[in-house]
Image (cartoon, rainbow, N blue to C red):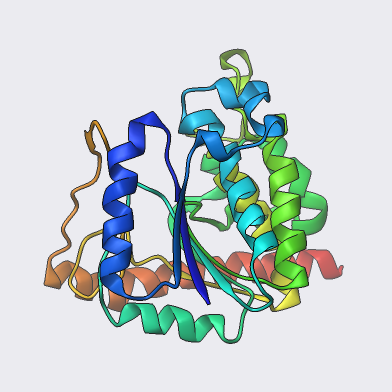
Length: 273
């Protein structure tokens, strides 16, 4: 079975309702569930991090709801987590994603963000013993869309994500410590930073598939568009023209993939000596 889940607080109530309607229209899911703050346990709602307005509490609820749903479903069932601000479309791209899930436990999506620019130094250093010195040069993993198949591996993975997301590793960098961050640091990406660290930590298991995202810009044939719609408006309206789509597919993404491969090879070599 396929389960689509999302989450929204009072700022995303209408967005949740819209996403649920769009999910039904795709005819891809057996169960569709929208979580809210009322579904969270005291261990989440009493955490001081949950009081932060950003992300409805630094997004610490995200790993909880994914792990919670995993704990309830049957072995090999699939969860699709999608941010409430996304749009869903009834396209054949869903079949492509689900075909990947026949072979892997997790399907994650790379985005054009370098880790050292969007993950604070504390988190970079936390994962360095497992991920290697150069993982800070890798591309980041999107936290807003994730496919997870229920297995022992994914249960342990999401449990670890949940535990780390409830720590200060997700919190913003205090202003007085910004000068200590890596050169070029722009801003911390909270739960997404933790997810990225864990994804790269477990890449050697061959249970995770990473592909380039196809949801940041709107184009025909997409299953998901990260339009970032809240009840107060829309933060993304990037419509990608056919020429730009071709340039991205033929040149930009291959070059980014080569860059990623270069740093992975450097990482592998440096850890072997």
